[in-house]
Amino acid sequence: MLQLIIGSLDDDQAVDTVSIPLAGKSSIADYMVISSGRSTRQVASMANKLGDRIKAETGRPVRMEGLPTADWVLVDAGDIIIHLFRPEVRSFYNLERMWAFGEAPAAPEPLSVIEPLAEDAEDPRTPDDGPPDDLDDDED
Image 1 (tube, helix red, strand yellow):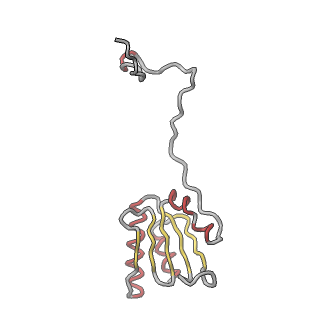
Image 2 (cartoon, one colour):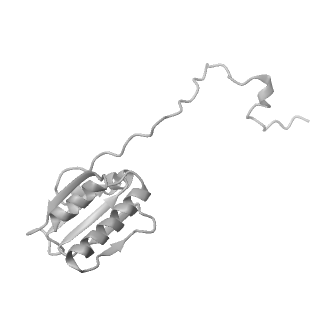
Image 3 (cartoon, helix red, strand yellow):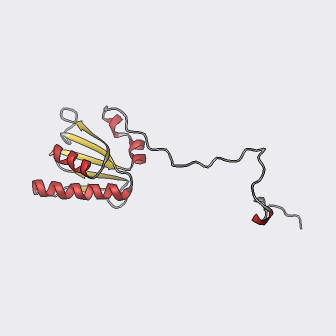
């Protein structure tokens, strides 16, 4: 079953998949699988496909939580619990550390950051751009 889950996540281009053995640490499951998708759409798609593949293999449906928002979807496959995250959410909750299995991968940096103008920089607007931002002038 673990190989089916890992294979399904690989097929769906999951990112940073880890498998944590829970036998002897917890009675909730034998394994916990944690993986990331790049968007809520990918996380939801991975969860749905995983549920379909597990049901086709075992004949039992899986339970899922968090599918409507798909920031974090929990898939309960009985002996294996699967957590599918968006990277930012995974980094925030850091389940790997909670189970003493290392650190979650860092969330990716934003694509671009707009730097503020230095205090001594000239205003790049032209006179056609309209009035300055300080509209507090009560001088009538």
